[in-house]
Image (cartoon, rainbow, N blue to C red):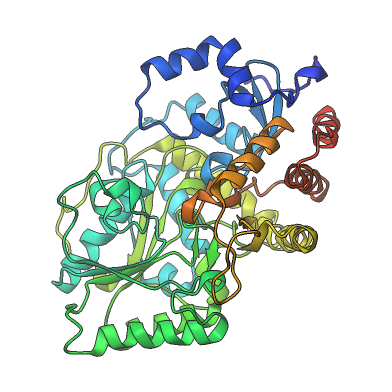
Length: 481
């Protein structure tokens, strides 16, 4: 495959500072016109990121208008190695040259055997030595569905406990575990026996306490729910959580809280499911986010980065849970050989280059820069995250504050900052309560200089200035690719 060499031939078109990028793109681009005409009303990203993309290389994408952007969305964190990384491209090309079957259901192949061996070599010994793996359909949602079936079958129980702010997918069962209300309001007959628990959202403590006091209250409440014979909630088949909530606003649970949840579930014989779909493979500064707390879950759900950029999802779990029968979970595309080839290459590269440590170091630097910006910009309410998974909650500093001194979320301002970033050549996404949190999920290969460029664009966008310093820096970086 010919390598992609991204250059900007007309620098005036890079991050053009129109009133809105949306108006400029829609008016001049027939692809976007046809997309709006034919594509479902459920489409999401094009509404705020109205781009028709043509090429991608590393952390950069180029649209059909010739404009180049730094991609800090990276397909919601899927592209751990960025766009068209050579090791992934070469692995896929080699598989195609060798004429491997592209799909094999759950029949094994040398490529599948390599994939499993590589993944298990990254897992904690408890799972690597005594674990099992189930290949699922293309998405993380399908793996979540499989995990629910697994623990319900193994325990003979029905109840599932999830957390406020959770996101585990958009299929019927996984949607029932979602904290966000909007996608669920039009759906009737959600999965039964799902109950929600408070997540340790330090900035906006659900108990109105904040800090360690809020965490302690949360643990005491969860302990009471699980032990009180009058709680009204039957002993669950499993508890599912994200060690860092992604779509919920990049909210990390503390290591102490995670250890207490693990201890509680172990003592009561409740399988703990950790959703690592967005956090897995180095994103948070460790290979898996649960490793920050030194715990080992009973079930780990993986997707996104695990396929090297191609569709792939798996569930890894303790062998003691492997009581379901043949055919209990299946899927036509669970034998995606190109995804396994690309995923194996990605895993090997992440480990060899220690991209988990790289993410930890750069993430600390980026958070520090954002916190310094926060000192002079009260519209930045909170900066949080782990590794290269960072959230900036935007607030209205002139509105009435709560008793903890927190200003209310400001979705309109967050949208304006996102649009300003896009005009300057930076793609970021929003999430969290009211869609007020800027979410940063750059490829793990991003360099310190490139991340400094990202910060420069964010700072200019928060300040609301008209300077094109961000686009100048992006242009200089691309010329060096």
